[in-house]
Length: 133
Image (spheres, rainbow, N blue to C red):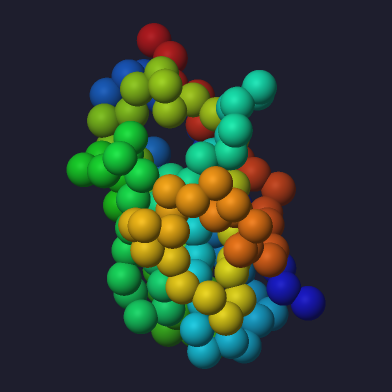
């Protein structure tokens, strides 16, 4: 059974930083994609950043240069996904979700497709990020 669990959300002032973590386990696919999404109330889900098993990354234009996605798969029984969020603005306030796409890779082009989220098989419960002065 695939498990996905986020942590690290919180409240910061504009210009501040946060690090989100996601522990994933229970999948054995050689090829996979891990991603961070976010969704504010009344808005569509937005793909923020992705990283494939080979380390290739992709970012939404709204976070490029401010957010950095990485993974630690040294432990073969689990994979820890991290999102370093810098220079946060109030527009970054929302719930962030971690997701796993088994047997599939993402890139900058596919991130822009309307059905991008449908490629992801497993989702966490989300972690709240609030940016406010």
